[in-house]
Image (cartoon, rainbow, N blue to C red; front, side):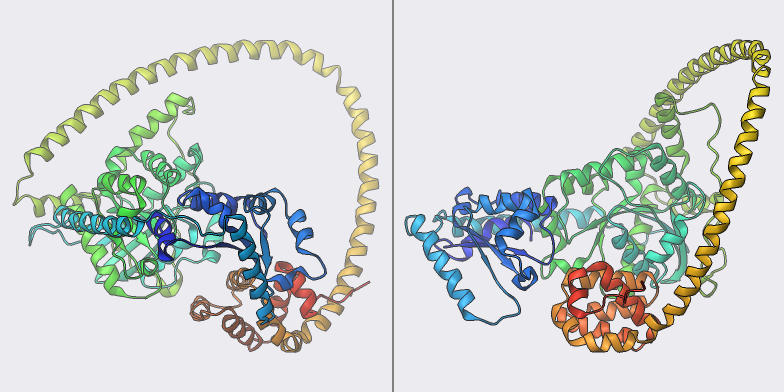
Length: 616
């Protein structure tokens, strides 16, 4: 729900709502982040709405023997703030009971609240509906204008597009799951998964960027996935990792795809994070950037231009920097027709830019940043273990990346028939002048750095002479050190003996565990079957999603099985599908699922009687 929809929501029950019910589920904690989000949403509405608000606690059956007042007190400051902000008005719904008296009691509390509010509803501007309609008409006009302008900006004359036999893309921004899904859709195959990413993170330093390649839409497509971008200023390691990601698609990426998930708002902190990270590659990277809107199914019947207009200045700033280039991926459908237009937009961008993004455009900027912060040690950055991750055997493709000179000559021949506009030529000259000034600055900084290094060498030589004087004094301590080493050897022998005793105890414990493990695992499938009914009725949506993540991470279920489970809209149907699917995989899979239930939700584990047996 965007800002305009939130603001317009109160006008849908004219002349104004009698009550606003703020739902808080009791199966999970009310966190600081939820409080901040609630404050931001309520700030878009009339402040008088707080005096008509009631906290509605759901899943009251999760309280057990504890009262709601005890729960509020135990949850901490954030939940107490919400209850106090609503005038200490709250009500509890037990989701396991279909009792109309729960609704009757809630209505009575609403009547009591109305009496305290002079017996009326929340006053809403009488012209709000008319203003809402006018605002929608105005937005529709802006959207139509925006659509025409963007279409004109991103359309090349027929026949000018330079076709690419291989396309190299860098995928950045958003969260890891967003990028994984986008990468899989672009390559039309499951190649980016949580498990694969964890395996790559065990590689040597500066190899956190992951590269995969497949043949898609008559092109060889390479996708480099970058790690998460934080909202804090990027560190030196982040700079190195990002530059390394560019080298993984040598001689340079054709496009940098900036991920923007439409399922959440794009705020100023997100804009600042994108700006700070993109700056690491230099100003020219924006000429090769394209906004990739992920999870387009969240838009429903709306056009993406409406979403852009409603999100405000931060998103429009990013689009402007990217030359108003963007593309939308549905997110759920495996549809090659969504990938082909993105490839064509990339080819259009390469044609306009006269080639791919060149890393040397960014290396000078990175070097300047290092010199200014004193991080350059006078040598060239060496990246240990810079090897391109290989594809699984069944996904391997022949190396079809062309030579950089060949790419540049092909682009030049494709664009030679039509001269560049004079404005483009002027921009190139301006870039060259700016780069010349920057080289002069770098030369002066390097000379200054050379003087500092010479002074450091002189100081080190003086320190070396002083060290030689101390050598004689150190020899006097040799006898004392020998005596200490003798004592330490005696202590080491004692520790070794104790360690041997501990190893013997561990072997005995291991033998006992091996004896007990078959007893726990053998009946896992039957234990799940006996708990099936209660599991389906009682598991919460967050717990179920966490369980699915663990099952996928440990490869108990596949990505296709996860997608099938996620198609179930009701939590109970999804839970039924999951427990039946895991039981069919046997006792080992069932035992792992039981362990994860114990880990994720202790209360549910108690109710289902799935606690592990005592081994004492």
